[in-house]
Image (cartoon, rainbow, N blue to C red; front, side, top):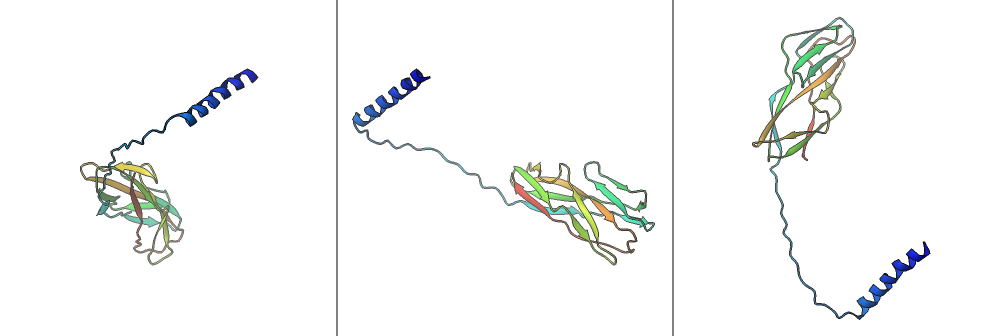
Length: 167
């Protein structure tokens, strides 16, 4: 171990001595290329609003789910889902690039009775990445709607927020 230490130290001392006695060299200028790509602002348009359809309750709580991956709606056995439904459909426009999609974990529908809480559903979940190709992409959002026990009849509505960022 001691022998190895001496071997390593000697070349360093010698190099320091050479550096001090070497003649000064003129500085040379080097150039390097640089590039930047400016991306268009991401825009979105709502093509379809989310619609859970009509839901009949027997006074019990239950969940209605709009599944954006399968395009289906399901209702707990305590509920009866009737009429049509829609996933929320958004068209994203911008530069051809990957876009990270995030959203608030819940949103609220308000109406004549207690507010109804919903959780947005997006394929891949929060932070999923979507590719904009040809200047646009279409994405679907669904949600889980948690209907309260004894929910008052009426129309309930609300908004959910989506955050889009180039990735």
